[in-house]
Amino acid sequence: MKVVCFIATLSGGGAERQLLLLASLLKSRGYEISIATFGDVPDHYSIPDGINRVHIARDRSRVRKIAAICRYFLSVKTDAVICFGQRESSLALIPLLFRRKIKAIAGERNLTTTKRSMYERLLSFGLYRRANWIVPNSYSQNRYLSNRYPYLGSKIKTIINYTDIEKLLPDFSISNGDNIQIGIFSRFVPQKNCLNFIKCLDKVKKAIGEGVQIHWYGDSRQKGQEDYVKQVFSLVDNLNLGDIFVIHPPVKNVAEVMKSFDAICLPSLSEGFSNAISEAICLGKPMLASDVSDNSLLIHHSENGYLFNPHDIDDISHKIISFCQLPLKNRQIMGHKSREIAEKLFNKENFINSYLNILSN
Image 1 (tube, rainbow, N blue to C red):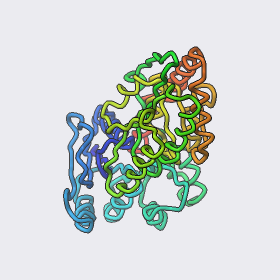
Image 2 (cartoon, rainbow, N blue to C red; image 1 turned 45 degrees about the vertical axis):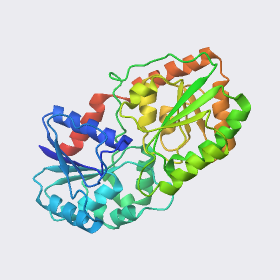
Image 3 (tube, helix red, strand yellow; image 1 turned 135 degrees about the horizontal axis):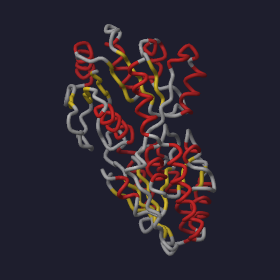
Image 4 (tube, one colour; image 1 turned 90 degrees about the horizontal axis):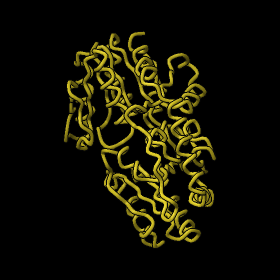
């Protein structure tokens, strides 16, 4: 069976990592896989052997890209298309209206928390009727779609992200408390709540001095986010936080870098199903994260970390300070609990079989 996996780019994001993992697992089951993108960002990840890489309309105008995407899906020889994201589903489902024999799987990779995007309005207007399956990666988005668009009914099937617990073995080593190291792996965009988080660090620094250091790994050069990134850097300077807040470029070996930290943090305003949290708990790391979406499935408050209100600077700072002031033994217990949660949640066979079922059903 031939399958096209469709996503905007293969930049360094969690959705991109999940798509590559899915493509590899499908390839291992005998499927013929192509990965098609239309963005102009260079690939951050390597393509597994045996998978066909397709660049659609590279370095073209928006209008020419849309035309090229339509031509591609009107002519590509495939049995199924798996889209990762509302924009990708919108672009692919229009030409697939004319190719009913191709199975169309529309993936939802985020959580709708504010007004609907242009792409969601387009999908809900009628395009989702063309999809054979709609696959959110979080139960929160499933509830949103089911409540808002009840006519979609049984088309909606949640498949949470998979994280390889056999590959990501735990590392329970943590500092003795003199200088706790906390890692964040996320883009510098408003959704990730960068400004609120930096403001909270002013309170953290005043409370515990240099007893903690935050390292944020993320892409600060995304198109359209230049002004926001300037605000981030300016706020760090204005609050004199350079000694406890360190900005790094994104890394490919996220899990390997995570091992060096005492805890992992994710202060997002919204999430789908977080790959960063998933990988961190597999590695046995305590967590500090927003109480949004499905994060509470991965983080059990006060057991393997703390959940906080991402809109409340005082709450964020309080949870960071509370973690840093925990005795070493308590932080070690949190790390072991993270691994226990990961082992219960992630099962490779369940993940791939969920996709095999909808591809064959």
